[in-house]
Figure 1 (tube, helix red, strand yellow):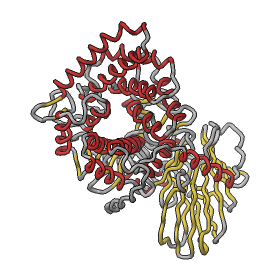
Figure 2 (cartoon, rainbow, N blue to C red; figure 1 turned 90 degrees about the horizontal axis):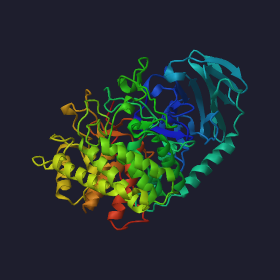
Figure 3 (spheres, helix red, strand yellow; figure 1 turned 30 degrees about the horizontal axis):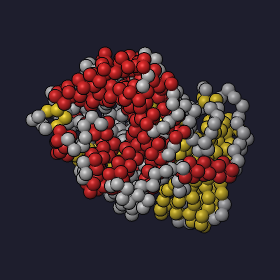
Figure 4 (cartoon, rainbow, N blue to C red; figure 1 turned 90 degrees about the vertical axis):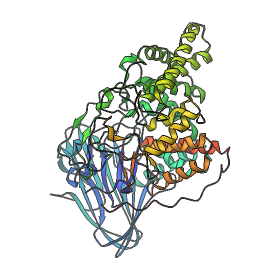
Amino acid sequence: MASLIEDYGLIGNMRTAALVSRRGSIDWLCMPRFDSGACFAALIGYDSHGAWALTPTSGVRERRQRYRENTLILETDVVCDGGSVRLIDFMPPTGSPDRSDVVRIVEGVDGEVPMQMVLVARFDYGANTPWITPAPGGFRLVAGPDAVLIRGAVPMKETERGIVADFTVKKGERVELTLTWYPSHLPDPDALDVGAELARCERFWTEWAGRCTYQGEWRDAVIRSLITLKALTHAPTGAIVAAPTMALPEELGGVRNWDYRFCWLRDATLTLQALMLGGYVEEATAFRDWLLRAAAGAPREAQIMYDVHGGRRLTEMELPWLPGYEDSKPVRAGNAASEQFQLDVFGETLGAIYRARQLGLPPRPDAFRAARELIRYVGEVWQRPDDGIWEVRGGRKHFTYSKVMAWVAVDRAVRLLEEEADPRDAELLPGLRALRGRIHEEVCQRGFHPQVNAFTQYYGAEILDASILLIPHVGFLPASDPRVRGTIAAIEKTLLRDGFVQRYSTEHGVDGLAGTEGAFLACSFWLADNYALAGELDKAEALMERLLSIRTPLGLLSEEYDPARRRLIGNFPQGFSHLALISSANVISAARGGQGRGKQRPKPPRAPDPAPR
């Protein structure tokens, strides 16, 4: 059975990523890309669906896991009856599409520890069993287009369980193991110089983290979140996936299990701001350029999400041979929400184009062409119902947040055209200014419910939606506006669960799905932002600290949190949550007027251990 979500660490090479459990097992890995079929799928299945375990065979007394400071090199200390060992896991950053490596090192720290390695590789999410043949230093495993080489200076043998190695590590000794994926039609790749790769990997991450310009009071948390976002980046294209996993449930045992290994336009502005806040102009530019390529073409054909290359076909399918994480079914690969119509993506795209200009990113002439074409389309469709920011499957409605983002699209287009001062666009401005005012007036009239004293989820509804918390962020209304204050009070009353915010109430069936979900962490950060923007700084900092306390010991966050079970749930680690963390750290620090900047706060107490399974 897979470990608790919060017991996994992330390693990656900016093309794909793996999850390593505190027990020493790699239970999730897709190669060569984030959205490739998994060769280790035990996270949502059994060991027989693919895993790579390194385990002491003597009694284990204690396990401790951490990252080397400001890196993505994972270290797990294991104290056993006869001694202790340190597992070092990392993936060397690579510029080649034809190989991807995972390195595992067992270091003897004290005494003498007997170890066992078991490698079970199953390609295409556990569906394909490979041929296994001997190779220099280990074994070769091949199935269709995929091949992996397992190498190491320990005796290995093929068994019914997989590739097995039994060995003993004494104090001061080091055992190096490597797994290399490559296309099966190519020759075997060269072996790695493990020591040199470890040094190179550590130097890469420490130098990258050292460029961070954020000096606020939550610097450690911000740097770990930025490293996580970098790990979710597909380096060749600049795209950033929402998460490296699929089918991790929003409700344990439930049906809300989606594939998040794609890139959402919804996250565009937050992504640019987070990267620029950290001082990462190159990464922000690469992401902006990916966004423009992905959104290129006819606006009516724009999607809410794309693959890492900007591809549009994300066909959703169920994988019935996988039992799902803690029996959460169905297990889905691909995402049918890519076919939905969401107005907010036009506001996100135009907002990101404008924000990139504000932040001083190198100009792109085609950005203005994209803005002109998108805004013409928004003028045609803003009155239509859509599927909403949360990809609900309960039918289209006039979602309030979607209309707000239609206003953002027009507002940013007006600003771009005003600041560009191109005479060719002068005739567009009067109409766009009028449209901006019309949308604003309609949202204030129809999106705000006087009896509820709040902006509600969709026109005429009485139910609430936490996406409305973004109204001050996008400049639609200030946080001090009585309607915004009323909305915050209503959300506190109806969507707060043990101090964390739900996206919306699932009891009304608006999303067309059975079951419920946990508190949505990005929405909880947004509430903290609203407190700060309204001058309630003590409340903002208290909520920020509460959110930081539920991070894993490695500083990672999933999409959601189950307050009753005290468990992280949803896909992990979740880029949206880490983006919101970075944004909140900046918003609250700015609201304090720089007070505390440059100082490190004491680390908050850990959240209680998860409830028993």
